[in-house]
Picture 1 (cartoon, rainbow, N blue to C red):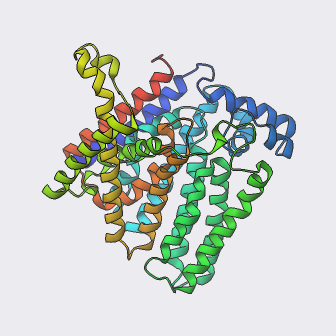
Picture 2 (cartoon, rainbow, N blue to C red):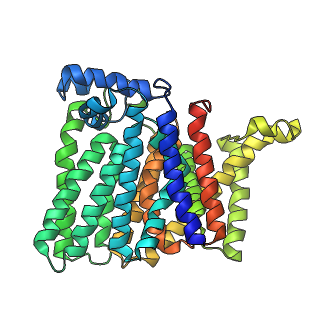
Picture 3 (tube, rainbow, N blue to C red):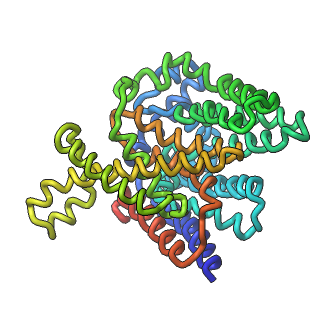
Length: 415
């Protein structure tokens, strides 16, 4: 019964997202107009140096334009068609996830489908899939890359030619993901994690080298043209720097996704709970005395029921709590990495997910949950063995979907 309900929730959630995307006829909003505007620049200049240097108000690379330009005959670059591209791509991503899960874990078909449908319960996936934003196309190519890379690793002992071919495919598709959004560069260092259990394995080294070269051959010319990782007109974003707070938020959001999908990922005992309490107190004192990080979710609602004294300190209480959660999540993830150190595919996917979350440390201008959406599919793939299907999971799944729906509809003012 639990499996059936979860399957209905997953399929129903995707169909609901598809339906509301079709019904959202509002003109491009939020960041959508910026990317659509560059479609017209692409139409005039093509994939040229002029286009790459004159892209304006768009930090991601030209993959968005490369995807949407040939689809003009279907979407006319108008809503809702231009948004439906991402929604359809989410369906393709889910299909790819089923193949990766089957390759890694050899589960029955029903369990494989349920594990892949977990992506519908990731709240931030709704926003990036229901709007014409830039995250979903590179996520699609990153999943294709991961699928090919895993096939290369699994084929290496018995079929070297197949392994080499898929390593090249993996590199090329990774390069395409990178020209969509530069944080996918982390897949290159993450690839080296397949050496963790066999540092002297010659075929593993060949796979890593071919993958890295393939990715760089596709993406490096773009960065040479830009003389950086972003278009030159994105000076504010491309200014460099480091934000501890944005990194903390990223890992805290990653922890939230993990709690929704598979809370058994976390190791819980008295010693760990005591350590978390001590960490929270220390971070709270550090925040009040030195850091001065504030974060106040639902402040407008709480202002109606809480006294002013509590509201004044509330923003200072939440920040160290998120910091504690982030540290706890990182610690559990390091433990799971060590626990699975003899599984190179698991290590690769976990390193991809954690390194993708870590890229938020380098984003100083703002934090967005959309950055976490890029890491979510990698996290889902390593959470499969820790996922327990029961009624509590159904509730968490529904809550994740609900948060995702609300966060998406906020942009459309529920119309």
